[in-house]
Amino acid sequence: MALGRALSVAIVGMTGHVVDVEADIALGLPAFTLVGLPDASLTESRDRVRAACSNSGHPLPTRRITVNLSPAALPKTGSGFDLAIAVALLTAQGVLEAPAVQKYVHIGELGLNGRVRPVRGVLPATLAAVRAGCPDVVVPVANAAEARLVPGARVHATATLSDLIRLHGGAPGRAPVEMEQAVLLEVSTRPAESDTTGPGDVLVRPGTLHPPGAPAGPEPDLSDVVGQKPARMALEVAAAGGHHLLLMGPPGTGKTLLASRLPGLLPDLDDESAVEVTALHSVAGTLDPAAGLIRRPPFQSPHHTCTAVSMVGGGSGLPHPGAASLAHRGILFLDEAGEFGSQVLDALRQPLEQGDLVIHRASGSARFPARFLLVLASNPCPCGFAFGTGKDCVCAPAARRRYLSRLSGPLLDRVDLQVDVPPVSRVDLAAGEQPETSATVARRVLAARAVARERLGGTPWTCNGEVAGSHLRGVLRLPPAVTHEVDRALDRHQLSIRGHDRVLRVAWTMCDLAGRERPDRDDVGRALVLRRRGQVPL
View (cartoon, one colour):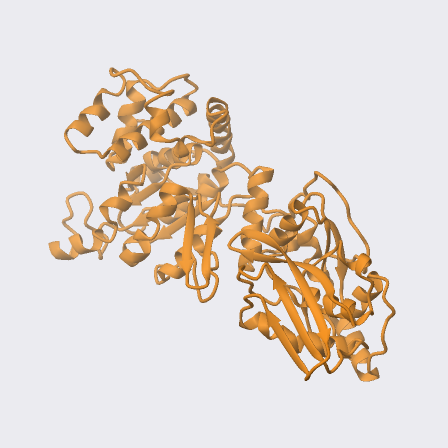
């Protein structure tokens, strides 16, 4: 017996780390020890690997077995190490040759019958392997399409442990007849998958990304919205500059309808963002590999009963991404925002400022990207009719204050656009005016974003909503005559310095939409009105 070695990948947050799996089979009392900070699901791999090897015709010897996952200080979780542990043990037994094994990274869970089952996080794991100089990656057949989304990866899909042994040049063992029949039955009854690659087949496409699959259906169109011209304009400004938006109004005025049309105004994700978003959904287990890379900005709309953990991420052991991270590079829509718990809403302050979430637990910490466009839709009071004169409202003044206090001052200070959505009048219905379609508005949004991207070239920002205040007051500084109104609001303590900067960001977006080089006084004034829940002159 000798020391066996194989490679796998541990995912911590969104970061993958290549792990060296060492297996030692020595004389002594029979035992199977797994060391290197494994969690409960990984510790159980001892039984899965032993049964899978036995039922694949290569039973483990009744000796003292020690498996080390290095680096030992790195927390490791999940069943994706099963395949690497089995390969390391088979190498230690002499079934496989070390030189043929050590260039591969192995990711996958083993069934007791030797089947290789899919796991979460294959895309970021494959990406980490390629970046570490290990492009040959062995994954389950069900995860092969996902792994092939990574440029430069040489993906080897395997359905069983016996197939993997043959891939590495080992002699196939003799499994029990009834177990062979069970595996054949499972393969024959398995639903057809997008991946038909056999064991050992390789797909190499360096530097390319697979196109996305066909969309599930057409996105809702902005032409469905009747009236609400100021709110439609605010929606266009939010999409063009990446500005957070609050829609406030009584029930039935179209707040949810407007928010659901916002994804159709956003441009497709670029390659870098698409890989990042797809990796996030892979870690969360919500990815459909057959659809390819996620090219459209994601849209997350959690229910108002959600907890802070489901919103920002967490859980036992190493943290998992929440709705805020799954909305990365897309939209996080909170309908009935006044019904959300104040703790849930205030948990969004950090990602709104920094664009990521750092979650600490006893077993370690994880960082998840969370740069999203926040859209809040809320009634003005519990009954919803404290609007205008408020004569139809039946809520007590204390109930109104308590309801709106859930949208705290620090949270609203981070929302660039705060717009009232009044009831649609009979005049709007009778006008018969044909509203603009999402495609028309999306073209203006795309053009405005291109102008902003060119202006912000050489900086870490791509749209106006991300620009730092120091840059606005430095390179992009506007004359005092242009910023007179917003400066007065700051002097009178009607705006914080953060609010001052956000008004200027919106002014730059309005300038880009209008096709001007620099904002004028009207742009700044309109941006200030939008922040104060006013009706902007059209």
